[in-house]
Image 1 (cartoon, rainbow, N blue to C red):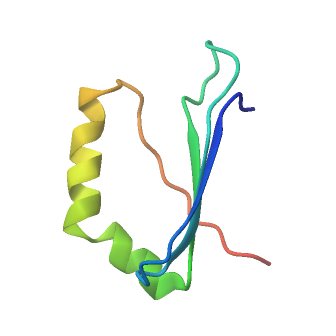
Image 2 (cartoon, one colour):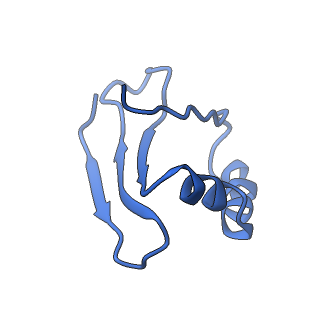
Length: 77
């Protein structure tokens, strides 16, 4: 999947425990990128998704790509 992978761990205490971004090797791939974000719990996730900062980032996306953004929330079994 990726030629470039970025991993990050938060120390800010905001509930985000880690983030990783994956970019496809194939320029004709359906997915432009995949981000995996791990939060302390569902409340931290919901708080982050509802934040003004997330809203600002999502509003900025069309300035950089015409790709459609989608979200999936998964929980360990």
